[in-house]
Amino acid sequence: MTSLALPAASQALAALQHSLDPLDAQAAGLLVAAATDLSLVIDADGVIRDATFGNADLEGEGCETWLGRPWVDTVTVESRPKIAALLKDAAPGAVTRWRQVNHISPTGTDLPVRYAAMRLAKDGQVLVLGRNLRAMASLQRTLVETQQALERDYLRMRGAETRYRLLFQLGSEPVLVVDAGTRRVTEVNPAAARLIGRADKRIVGHDAVDLFDAGSLRDLEALFAGLRATGQAADLEAKLGQGRGGVRVAASLFRQENATSVLLRLAPGETRNAEPGSTSANALDVLRSLPEGFVVTDPGRRILTANAAFLDLVQLATEEQVRGQPLERWLGREESEAGALFATLALHGSVRHFPTHVRGTYGTLEEVEVAAVSVTGGSQPCLGFTLRATPRRAATVTGGRELPRSVEQMTELVGRVSMKTLVRESTDLIERLCIEAALRITRDNRASAAEMLGLSRQGLYAKMRRYGIGDLDAPDDLS
Image 1 (tube, rainbow, N blue to C red):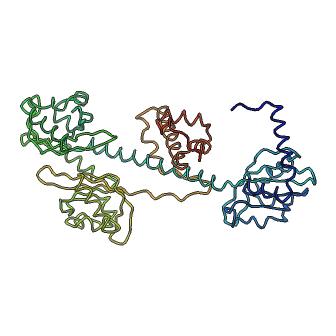
Image 2: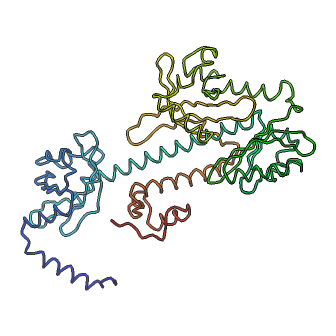
Image 3: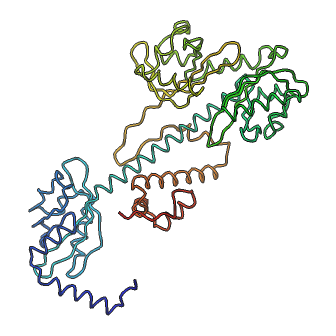
């Protein structure tokens, strides 16, 4: 539809004014009340002489006490200059620009209102039209809280990955991570590299089958075929290439980042015992010294060994006090929590990020996050558990600000990537999370999401296209 030319627009405005001339004062008041959340009539001294409220959400905000009071006395100190500017700028036949002010509310939380004003030609009084911004302020607060929660989850995930890397590198058991589709090795720990007799760079990227003797080729291909077909495969005896001796191969399937991988655990044969006093003892010392609880139990969940951090959680002094005891004696606020953990472990073979509680012997209750694995191979099947105490959430600070949870978590990547790359990736992540949160809060109303984020709609679409968010061909939800 083409826009009206200026003379035509002026004629249309004059015609509208002519049509509204017959409206009496009562009809005009009803029209104003229906079009706004609240309207005020201010006299020449700045005192509120009349008020109309068209929004039931304003009940309980103390608006009924405004009549007869100076308008400037109903707002907070920082909003008073805006009230003075509105009264000064109000002129007959013209509407001032919108200004947001905060009214003092008996609920304890300021009432945000957006105002525009115009001066009436007859008696010089000022008509003020207002829109209640309480709902918008609540949405903005929710968006900030969601963003903070996502950032905390991201930092917690990075901490868990660091712990996994530490255990993977220091573990005495030779382990290979293999892509299930291509059979190419994606990760190898130092113990596996020593066992195979090759450097890490000569193992990663190669077909896992090529690391073994040709005589074991058929058995290994059958193992991978069984994993792809059923997700399970029996352990097998195989020989490593280059005459490195026999090993027992145990394989398990797992998913990570929408990809399927195979965890290959290699147990050296009897003729290849570990060198005395080396990695096994060192790895055991590391696990015992971990600042997080570490427990090994038998298949019946009776404790075989536990480190000092677990003893601190359960408020006991020596390992002998917990050895032979069922783990559920201290794990879970209720029996159902421990039962859910053990059922998931039995079904999938491993559990990550399981939130529960540890009950201390003397009544303390500590929130923890549990990672667990079931080791069925080897001479003695067992279950392994790590228990990480969940940091207490800081109390919410007035104004939406919150203290960072841990400086150490923010600096873990320093030295691994450049600061420029770290800042750029962190900025991209926060932008994507904010856009997803805004779309979720507004139920995919992109116009509202763009306004909430302070972006133009074209700017929002550009960022959504950049991060691959949503269906850009779908029509906007304008409801």
